[in-house]
Length: 114
Length: 114
Image (cartoon, rainbow over all chains, first blue to last red; front, side, top):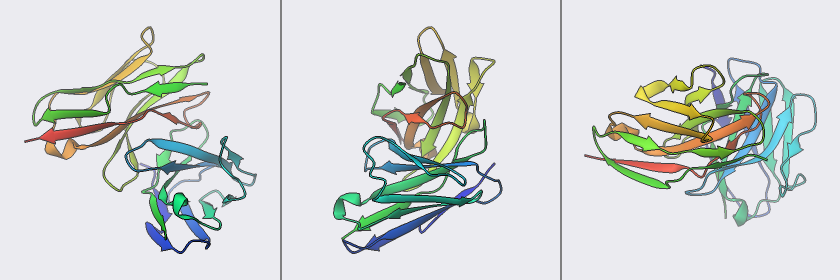
């Protein structure tokens, strides 16, 4: 099956700093990548959809200036949480897919903002 | 817009007993249906999917699900669970294409007791 990695798996940062999370498709070219957020004991909420070479499409209520998404290549997408605050602490999960195919999920990144 | 309802937030079950996790969806168009499993602090793993064809879908780890269009349901079943099946299970739908964005249900936590 397709493999998707995320880095880092866990990050702790101070309030006001920015954090970058990488999502890579290791053995396939992903035309589309998705970013989800999951609070404890809750479901996944889609934040944005990114297609390689174009701007990300954000879901309603997600601040695009706070959650910067870049999909510069067919194997890499990054999510940057800018000026992070404690309420941004969460589990961030990415997924990747090829056209007409199922999404494959990364292992997630746990962000803790102090 | 589509929505997904998982009727049980938590299902306790004894080892080697059968389990059924219920999932209902609403959508005005045809959907693709998925079940994912999430172990603690990990990403999502695809259990099975319904794209078209036979309404009974078999997945990994002995799980199966049946698509019922008239009842807009996609219930997940396993005839005999193991301790290792303790996890969170998510039902999800996409429209238009299998690789399009997913809408998740609230999740069902399965706790397998010895």
